[in-house]
Image (cartoon, one colour):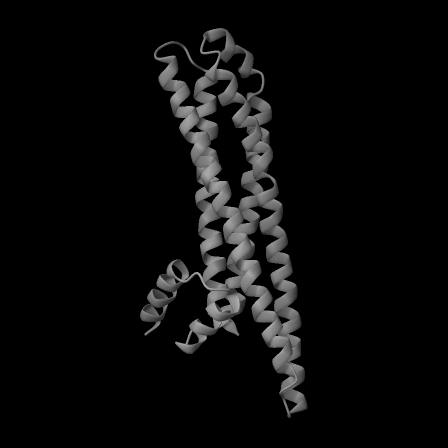
Length: 215
């Protein structure tokens, strides 16, 4: 049953293009609440960040290999670096989309939860639900802040890689490569900072998922 619901959710996430309220309403009619959608999107964002982390590691390795170029097909080496850059751009775009998707469903979930508090007749149950809402919101803010901090570190690294790719495109010679060698340390530092932020964000996502699954 759980596998069937996940399959239906995955299918709808990629095929429905209606506005958010109709979209989430449609999911709830087939037994998939906003909470499940939120957890699913956090999982997807976590996985995308892991893939992005690996992609930037790969791009750094290619840049390091280029600065250590000792001879051979320089154009092929440049092409590999350019491919890594383009793959990194694609992953950066995917990370931004995943974060946006989480923000969209969280707005809907928290608004619904807040409105439904007024429907309680039992004061103790209402108070308990309010406490859970407050705690979930706080945990969510911690998660989304970590994701946004990690995402913010992507663009500066992409800008550096883009500069290298553009420069080499018009200067495919050993002298040009030598001029980039001095920047390797700075690039490594930027990528390391990005990876550390990604790992923290991934850990926050895992903690959030565990919390939501316990509720």
